[in-house]
Image 1: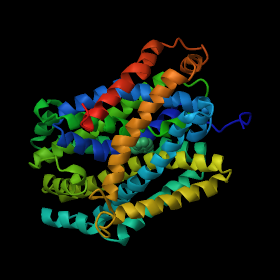
Image 2 (image 1 turned 135 degrees about the vertical axis):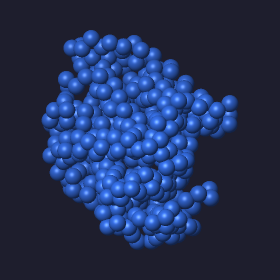
Image 3 (image 1 turned 120 degrees about the vertical axis):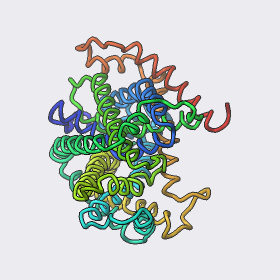
Length: 453
Ligand code: TRP
């Protein structure tokens, strides 16, 4: 297998857009704003950016190295470098985590589709009690959310089966620019509203009194989730990189794009929310309850603008979700395709169907079947918490230890410098980060959270 030429992304732009497409998703536009709202605005953003630069970028470079070196699915890539030792478990854990994330990610993606449909049909009109009820009725009903979840997974499926270049790369090159334009339009509309400055102030003036110990784990988990690291997603994409891709530079570019888009998402949501005096700290429902209200009220003098903005907003969310779900799907598809020697089509179908089943359970756990609980919380919340705040940071932690202390330094240096053709600026710092800084920081935040220190 090592001798067959592996499929590759066709261009540098394709590499950046596809990987950024994985990173930019619901994490940026749905999760980042509500985490920021709940954790004191700018103070959270500062912590978040520190996590991205000190922990996120080194972990991303590490996944790039493992993926490009392995030139195979994530389990095989870790296996190759681990020489059959227990370290290879990290790769399998990645695939498992992937399935869990697909489960709840597809559910929220499905909600976005319903909301495109709802805004287009003019259903998202009424007072705030009505909008609240609309979301509760919809998300807690049995069939509707499941059907949208499955529809979204099949949309992803049809892109995945077209392959790496004609499917993933093509979709990213098309969708990412559209996503960016939609985002800019809504940011401008939101910042032009009266009193928008309050929202901008909230976003950029730190209030450290709201920072608690949970904020740190929140910022860490969010950085990992948003950059798609900790479960082999980036590693799988890197297996399609060419030998002359500058790994460190790409990681910096992708992290900058991702953080920039998250902050733009904040600039889209907070000015609008503050302009109509809505407190934006309402948790995951921010996007589906608070925002439709905000759009209605903010543009009440010209309702057609509210209608268009709401339609554009949910389309934007769906596009962002789609490119990310593609990357999650690809991790599992590549694994099944290569490890079980099934055709890519069959492997993709297995992932789509399994994802639909997990998604259905997640969705049902939100209301229709409230018996689907673990530790008193719906399966949906458990999956979000366990993957985002536990499995991803743990995946990152072990990946750093593995590359930093187990894998021969020569392999790292070769990959980092493209076999000596690049100067390898900051290689020493990178190595120091993955050997010492990342494992210690992740461990401290973790133990603190568990109440051990
Ligand atoms: N990063 C994506 C987002 O911000 C979600 C995502 C895609 C992801 N692939 C991942 C999260 C892998 C964790 C791990 O929405």
